[in-house]
Length: 402
Image (tube, rainbow, N blue to C red; front, side, top):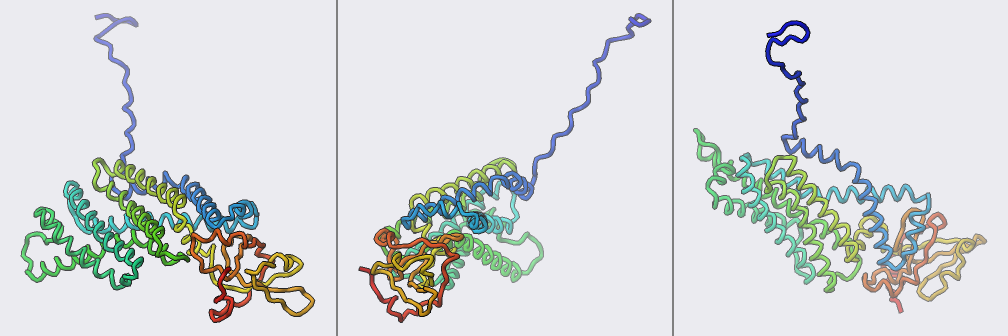
C-alpha cells in the first residue's frame, strides 16, 4: 500500500456516470395516440385538400369540355375567397366521409368491456355484421336502377333488426365472448333485469352497427340524388357499384387498429397509413375514372345548377351576336339601356367565372354534354344579373334541342 500523491490504497474505481434520462413513455391509450396522430398530420392536411380540390375542379371542367376555364378560375384574385372556401369544403367532406364509419364502429366497440384478446375476436365479428348491413343497403340502393327500392327511413329499421339478430347469432358461437359482452356478471340479479339488459344492449349494438353501414353507403346515395342525368344506364350502374366498393374501404382503418398486434401507438400508425391509402384511392381513382362522381359533387355544392333562369345582360358588355344561334332564346327590354336577357342554366360558376348554357339542354344526360358544350358561353358574373326563375309551364322548358 503506497502513500503520497502516487500512493494507492486499493483498486481505482471508474468515474461515476450519470444515468441516462428516462425516455418519454409511449402513449398508452387510443385517445393519446389519436391526439399524437392529429398533431403529426395537421401540416399535410391543407396541402392534400388543396391538391384534391385542384384535381376535382380540373376534372369537372374536363367533363364539361371547358378545361380552359381552370386558368381564369384560379388566376383571378377575386376567386381567392371562393377557392379557400372550396378547399375547406373538400377537406371537411373528406374528414367527415372518412371518419364517421370509424368513429361509430369505435363507439360500438367501447360499449363492450373485454380484454385485448377478446377485443380482436369481437372486432372481427362486428366487421362481418357491418359488411352484411352494408350489402343490404347497397342492394336497396342499386334497386333504384330497376325502379324497385324502399325509402331509407323505412329500410334502416330493417337493417337494425338484421344487425341485432346477427349480433346474437355470431356471439353465441363463442360462449366466452357471449358471456362477457351480452350478459350481466354473476350475482343476485332478477331474471327480468338480465333480460332487459340483454335486449337493450343487443338493440343498441344493432343500431350502432347499422349506422356504421349507413355512413358508408350515404356518399353514394348523395351522388345519385344530386346527379342530373340518366342514371339508369349501364355506365351509371358500374359507377355506383365502384363508388360503393371504395366507400366500404373506409372501415379498413378501424379494423386494422383493432385486429393487428402491438401497442396503441403502433396500431394507430398502421391505421393512419391505411387511412391515407383510402383517401388516395377515393381522391385519385374516382375523379380520374368516374365522371358521375365529380358531376354529382358539382351539383351538390352548387358549382353547377340546372335551374332555368333569365340572365340579364348589357349589349355594351356582350353584344347580342354572341347569343345569335338558334339554341338561345333572347328577350329584349324597352329603353335606351340596351338590356336583354337569355334563358339558360348554369353549367359552372367559380368566383367571378360563370359558364351558362342554353336552357333547352339542361336535362340532357351526362354523356351527351359534348354535343352542346360549344354552345355554352363564359361570362363575368359581375356583369350578369339574374331574373326570376322560369316556370316549368314556360315554352323554354318544353323546347327540345335540334
